[in-house]
Image (cartoon, chains in turn red, brown):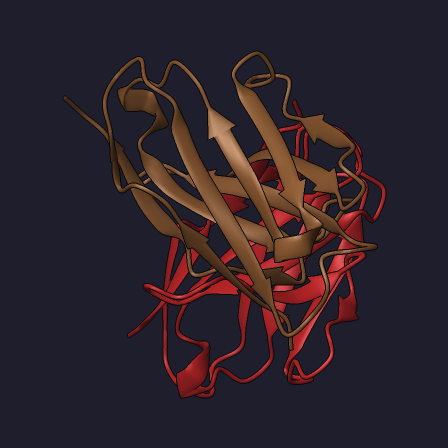
Length: 107
Length: 116
C-alpha cells in the first residue's frame, strides 16, 4: 500500500495566519490527491481533489498544490471555522490510503 | 444534498460478525459508487472497500477475506459485514458516497466496539 505521511501532526495558529500542511506519498501518485476537513464528532468534508481543484462551496482561502510525492494544503488566512483536523488521501493506487491527519488548533 | 446514516450494533463480541447498514437519503443509490471507511480510536482512516449500485465490489486486500458488501436499491441502502472480528476492528465506521477516488459525502460515523 502507498503510505501517506502528513506533517505536522498538530499546528497551533491564530486567526488570520497563513498555514501550510504537507502530505508526502511513499511513491508517486501523480496528482491523484484529495484533502478533507473533519471537525470533532462530524462527518469529514471534501475540500480539494485532483491536488488543487476546490470542491464546490469551499472558500478560496484554501489551496492545494504538488505532484508526484509531495503535496501541500494552504489556508491563506485562517478563519475561526477552519480550526479542525485535515487529512490527505491518495487515489492513484488501490487501496486508497489516507494520511494520519493534522490538527489545526487555536494558538 | 445526499445524506448518509449508518446503523447497527455498537457492540460486537470477538469472533462474531459486525453488520452495518447505510441508508441514503435525498438521492438515489443507483448509478453511483459507495464506500465503507473506518477509523480506529486515535488512528488514521482505512478504506474498507467500495461497491457500485449494481452490486460489484472492490475490497481492501487487507480485509478481503472477511468483508462482504451488499446493496438493496429498493431501500436505498447498502451494507457491510465483517466476520471474525477482534479488538483490532474496534473503530468508527463511516459509509460514504464515492469509491472510484474521492468521497464527496460521508455519514456521521458509528462507533463499533469489539468486546466480550
